[in-house]
Length: 538
Ligand code: C2O
Ligand code: CU
Ligand code: CU
Image 1 (cartoon, protein in one colour):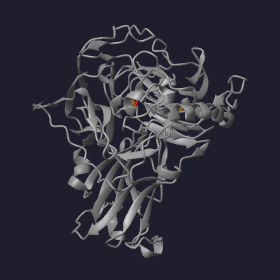
Image 2: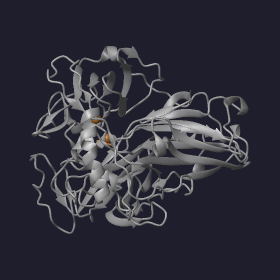
Image 3: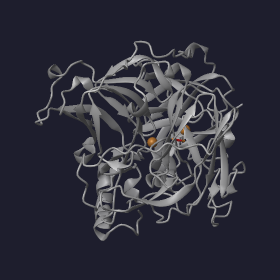
Image 4: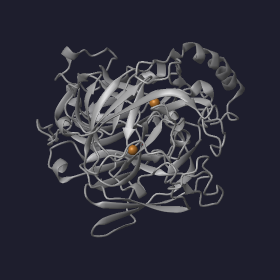
């Protein structure tokens, strides 16, 4: 998955692509006050085409992600072992793909957790590179939050503790094994864990280092929502494959060891042409005519999806809404930070990298034999589809979507004492084109904000290109986008999907813990190319 790993054909395509990318790069804006006067290039994410023939869509059953069993439990805590290993997986039928996986699996096994019940996850790094795990959406003390320089060096040796090109005096670097402790003092929500190694998160997640952590609580358990095998996490990610099944990735350093970054044409982000759900290409799930809950995660490096249902009858004819029972076909019940107050009927759901949507689909709207494609209207060609449901039978259904799901506190912006501005733009980073926040590349030694513990602040986030912006620790509510008050229901978020040349105002509450945390763009190529900054809760 490297420059040397690219075929000749691939390399030629890349060379040709460089000029194309330069030509199609949109001129940067200088709208925000204080912005550099020179126009900058803001390259879009770019497709890396596979050399392997693309697999046939809907030919693979949707994999059920394994649940991680605790190795021990006591009155307060569940203890887990989650080693990081090199493994091989059959992703494209008939081909073997080397991966880096938690427990040697992609996606990593799902951690089933309870709100308020602590978990301790012991990780041993058997990869050839350093790693650091972050629980995305977790309210976690800083020592376990997976700060990008808190490296877990390979157990087998190599990589001196000062290997990072940027020294960070506060970095907590260990070799071999680390114990991450998560209090999970937070409401029920769909979290996910993934690698967060400074400068190398993109290639590490691309190789497979990501998995779910589902937090449940009593409030949610009391609701009559679908559960058990009808509560299905869906991890969506796009990848590209070499002819032999190896993952392609345009890393400058074949081994992802020393030199960070991707080939210039991919500076806007890497897109794959194979859409995987739970690690399988365009899978199919057989469903009965009943309700299902799907916890949808966009775990892609740089691809944004706009999901819609496209139903067809048994003989392949498109099914219009008048032929279906019931109107809204997707009902969103939750976001990054857990349940909404009320169900929210949607015709489509946009998900940028890092975001989650918790949805109910009631397949009783469709006749037996119908197929329902989960389409991606933001993608062309093969990326225009994600997976397919096939309605195969009847089943008694005693579930319901209650009109009231939860109580969602509304943050009061009038009570915020501090407003901060952050501009997310391309710019020069150590002599190369990269991505910056307020004109500065990531530097672990610089503190960009010092919010007080428990305070609510207003953060104004401005973009040049599309940037999904994620804060560690602090959950927030979107107040407005481009000055227009959000009409969406009040929701807890940890990642906000911003398009090009937008400004979002968010109300952020810095609850939880004191200490240093990162915030960054969740386009992983942008993140690796320095679009990250720090806040210290004081
Ligand atoms: Cu999902 Cu700091 O990342
Ligand atoms: Cu996070
Ligand atoms: Cu970005």
